Length: 116
Image (cartoon, rainbow, N blue to C red; front, side, top):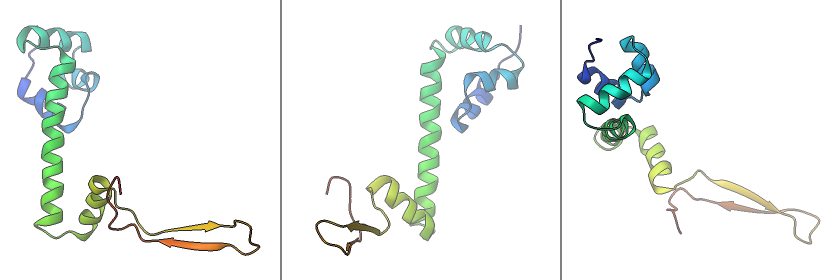
């Protein structure tokens, strides 16, 4: 019987690996991993994976937030503003309407939040 290091499986799941990748790393068939998860961890692999993946996502978001806020990483501040707050770069729209020359609207959406 193949030994499954569940700490390593957890680490790989937190990093974003899927069951097939982890099984390949362990040198076993994915069904072996899924069956052993059910028997040894008392959970379907999909549920187990979702829990560990969420933990990894949380750690990643925390590290990004720390880089943005504590380290004042300007690029990360901008990226997180776009991702979490719906902020966007300036946009320029042209509207021809009934006129021969376009009317240009410049929108500064840097501080626009979702839903406004």
